[in-house]
Image (cartoon, rainbow, N blue to C red):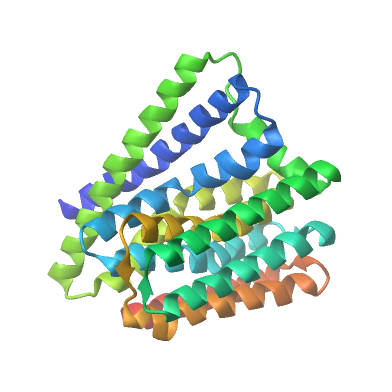
Length: 315
């Protein structure tokens, strides 16, 4: 029954997050907000809503292993699992100019996450610092893309166009967004409660459950979106989704969680898992820098590394 509740929770998280994004984009459109700004803010935050709500619930329920493990594990899964699977379908060519900016932001965000984790405690000042970095990144990206439109700007506008429901009234859009929020809250509650029960019943630490089951579960929307984008031969959308998601996860989700409910960092994450994230990020940069393409064999390497990582955590 616990597993069933977790599956229902994951379903509600995925559906609720999608509905929230569509409703929020509809509201933005009615209010005259540009597609570029909507893509950088609403879609960015919206696609990370499952991770955000899950981490907040876990923090309030006294499960820091799930709260922090969800974020670290999601970012590791985004790079090694999702980009790995996507690259097997379609080699992911990138725009060097756009990647220099967002790649630099990703590295900076990952190092900020490393520092926050090594402090051992996510305090409110740390949370505000992470959020300030996220706001700075959004302003930097918006100004550079508005001043000189490039493939990254087109990608953000394309993503907004994909989730826009035309002809929707402001009231309907607000209703859709509220329904999405309710869905993600209910889903997160079921997922976190189920994860805590499974950890207790099977003698597994909450941190391991957060890094694996919860992290992969909350990353399912990104997995589906990236696989579809790869099948449609849109490598820029695949990489944009993952890089943007990882930046929002470590700066936005950890930042908001620390501000709302400061938590202690589990020792395992500080000693091992955050370094895995740093290594995965560095390897992504190395692979992309050699030819500006994530090749199929490199995607295979990512998948093998992820399988080894999960095996190490669970065996």
